[in-house]
Image (cartoon, rainbow, N blue to C red; front, top):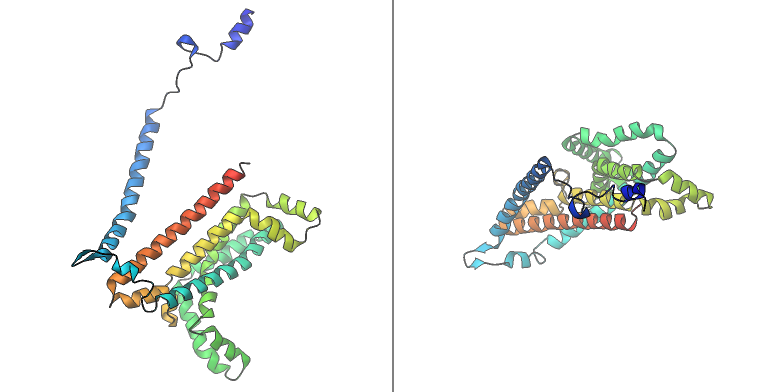
Length: 297
């Protein structure tokens, strides 16, 4: 073996015995990792201590520790009705918001990129307008419109929107309130995907636009759609002001109503709803991680 070959073969090996030395770890990087764990611990205490105090309040009794308040939740008066109503409102809000925003985001990305600033501004309006101002305006319209249009189909439509069993007016207001979160979740997914290339390939192969939306766009934006749906559902399940001012009873207003007579039950239901929200968030994170593992590219 020549000297040149030997030099080349041992050029990347250092240290005694031909063993490469370990890469040194900088002290600053170690300190940064320690501070990261300190921040995580503080944030964990910030969330877990109030939650633990709430759980202790619900399980503590004169006879010791008991879980009776949790086992009585399904049979509590008004729980099934109001929780089911809020779930129905959430499902309808998610469906309408996605039907509005998914085609809008795709259209802006593929055909009308110049309108992106305008769409972003319009979806920010619900954040700029205080919810109390929005609901007061809706309440004023609901008060005078049926009387002004009395005897017309429009009046009947206003009455149908205010049906207590399923108030569609809440769905419409919740869609408006959810637009900023839905748009930004979908827009982040569109920006990170090669949507233009995929849709053009599907169109060249003869797929219609409905089929492109179902077979190409939705699978690509699966995680973004789930994030948007989760944010919208969390908004509906936790919204109190609009429903209370308009006079409808939903899951949050029911929790507040029973707080005076059954405080332990109210806190227990709140804890379970918070845990349900966390479980949904973890589920979406797991689905997103699984998709990244399946599509490493």
